[in-house]
Amino acid sequence: MAEVRLTAAAVEDLRELILTHELPSDTPERVVRRLRALARFPKLGPALSGRWAGARYVLGPWLWLLIVYQYDEDVDTVVVLTMRDARRAASPTNQ
Image (cartoon, rainbow, N blue to C red; front, side):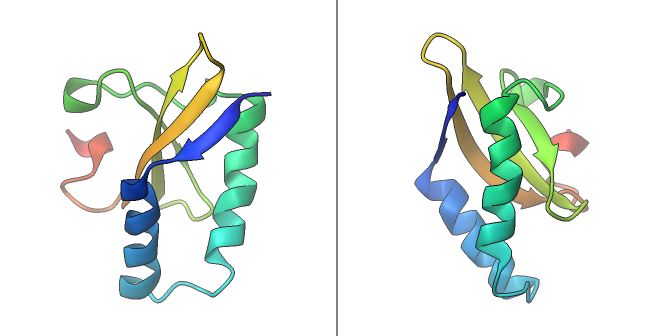
């Protein structure tokens, strides 16, 4: 099973989304449950291109919550780079 790590930026992004989107208090636990799938299946998400080439993404726990990550197969580690609202024009999936 891959190790899953979160960058400081990803943690801050989630904190900001919780505030701006008035997400429920159990949001961090919901995100952790979603990240467990990446630990088991680190290539689960589709690959991104352009500025985000080399990264992948999954959605959840809400369909608009974009979790962008990189998987380093050599060390079997998933690094979550950012968490964003996929509905925004600046979303990595809209580039």
